[in-house]
Image (cartoon, rainbow, N blue to C red; front, side, top):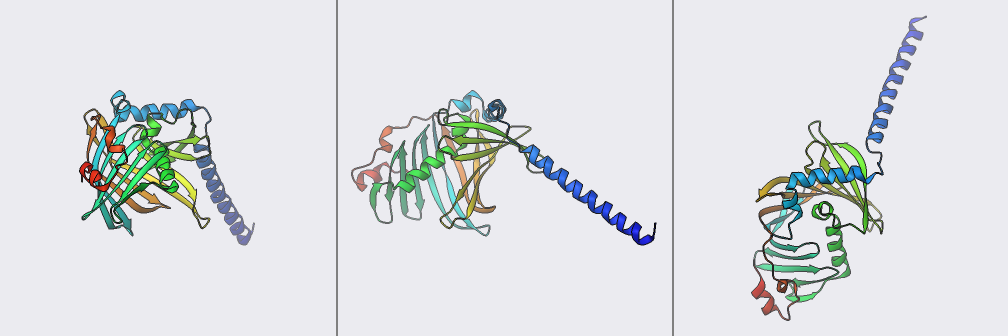
Length: 274
């Protein structure tokens, strides 16, 4: 065999080896994320996460009161932030007060209804359809909604497989598919069940695909329950906002009065906490 033919043969074998390795890698990744239809696989992932967060103590949380900061980020820098005071009565009552300087805003949702106080305009009004839809989406994509199985009867689970995480670790991936087609994926540490991400996909007004990820971090023990004190939002891989929780209280008594739409601003201001 001439030296030229030998050189061509070696180049062909090298190219074939690289192509084969790349193909095997793709196939391995595809196999890793091939959906497993048996919901028992997904239920096992949920059970592990619930155990990590506190087991029955976590499942028996009925109310949650949080304080902290909500920040908007651009190019990894904070461009604005608000203090917040948030009261939740599970599964679908929530009142959030926001404060920026001397400006205060309030958003309240109870099931399918809701109202807001616009501190800039100093008006109390019913929420728009978009605001109500966003609240509904927020519940559907929340970790608590998944782990406490409040989606039962309106959605189903699939186990997707494992994905690379960080430092050589992998995450278990499950998907919650609602009857109307809405989908959200959740990732949990495969070894320990630590909640890692919630992922949704949508198409914006320009027809562009948008991937939104909520990433959980800094889990803090409150009594017998672990809860994330940092939730980062990434939009198409770009860090867009952060929730910094400063304090949390569980199972405190909450008056239904705080969710009722007030008749006037003076009455509302008496009920504000911030």
